[in-house]
Length: 351
Ligand SMILES: Cc1ncc(C[n+]2csc(CCOP(=O)(O)OP(=O)(O)O)c2C)c(N)n1
Ligand code: SF4
Ligand SMILES: [Mg+2]
Image (cartoon, rainbow, N blue to C red; front, side):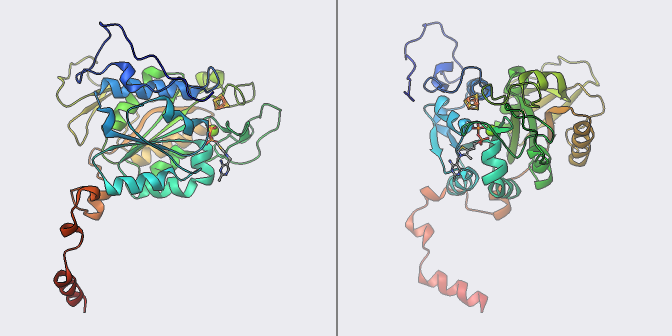
């Protein structure tokens, strides 16, 4: 069975958000992934982030490719728009949807196989074009759905469940996103929801391409000794640069941290990102510094997590292309076809 609905009834005193929605309003049917799969924790973090930000479910469009990770949008935001694309094609379908209607919140969910192999080019171009989206990669180092082959993000020298050593160099999607111009770049761990939920909230509030690479152990095919994506390995090698708190525009900012230990970033929509520094020298607004840090710590076998880069001044594809403010699906015939005289004037201007 692939569809197990959840009961609709709930306790009358259940917590509601500003819109009067309960947590349940952001859920989907019961997951059919393996018990303990990291991807389910990421679904839980997305649900919590959307509930806490009081996002109207109908304003979200969730898109994915193919894989266990790409199946997960079925299990959250059951009242939102959804599109399950062909393998690796989520970024171009999301770009097209965003082009037609920029007023939705675009949430792309993908896997390391989906984004770093068959969809590698799509991943790169959606980011470099500046598509306003939250792009989450649920990174387990394997193709979970097709039974555990190494993916392109698997570390060189790491071992498969059957003892095969990976001889290929890994692709680091975070490093790549920094290089390609993503304006919000983070890495999380599915086993640390306290860190992950604010990273997702900050990305949902961000204007521009936001990439979150979430290390998400596959308990069935990649959670053994010798794997660098197991729960134990990630816990031992997790090197968090900061802890994030997201303050929506209307909420007062209470000074909870000692001066000097706090970085403050105001985003396009007025929301404030409060970053408690765990690494005193780390500056999340320095793109080159982020790349250097990632490489230096990576060479020591550490997995750098947290909000690694954010650009306060970020814009998006629509600003770059100067597109019409009204979504294409709401433009009338007169707007879309201004007539023969306008065409003649345009042609004349080009002669
Ligand atoms: C065009 C095409 N090629 C290959 C496949 C087989 N396939 C299905 S899922 C998958 C990889 C999934 O890996 P990933 O994106 O890492 O997701 P995970 O299952 O690990 O979450 C592959 C190669 C496919 N479905 N379609
Ligand atoms: S095979 Fe791996 S990735 Fe897929 S649901 Fe099971 S644990 Fe998760
Ligand atoms: Mg995978």
